[in-house]
Length: 226
Image 1 (cartoon, rainbow, N blue to C red):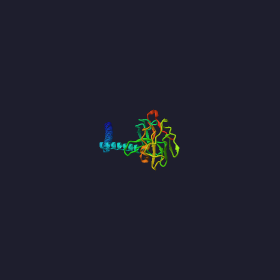
Image 2: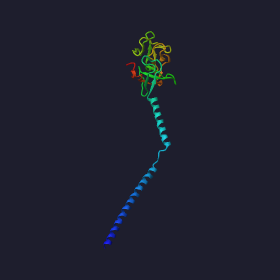
Image 3: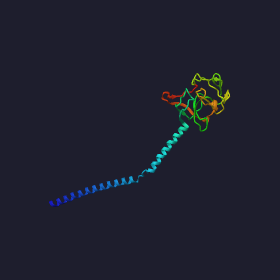
Image 4: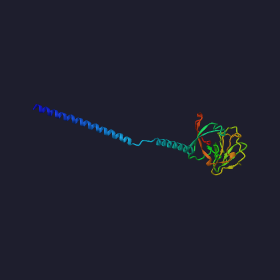
């Protein structure tokens, strides 16, 4: 009887070991299947090809260049002044921020313009707008618009503005044009409307509104009539 009990005990104990072993094997099999599934899913994920990555870079670069061109051609640009036609207000080598968008010409503004198609840009000051009458006194050098003498604080005091030989005065500025002069009124100091005539609106690139170089002159450029 004792032997039978011992045998049964041994049998029961043996069954428990087998069950634990089977359970452990089931867990291992389950984990292996789970890992295999994860590996399979990872393999199924599309990998970004080198060609696609290069294409994305190219698209990004092209988009950046297009945005830069749009901003430069339609919003604002930077202008490096070459020459002395706007002295003493503006010096050779000065760099300006020129605003293009939503600019309406105003008398007294300093503007960037291209008087000739495809030519180099000029920097001048607007003296009169369309339909205004400009006059230059050849003896005193006084410039008047619509009969009012301008207070030109921006030019040298020891210079007499000469009227030039192309335009007869008093002169009425045609529609869609502006009359411009350089601040340098010394003989031969500026090529402007006295010698090349009025400037059409479409030749105006923008307003030189802010000087960024040299740093000692950093700041906005006030309207000449202020």
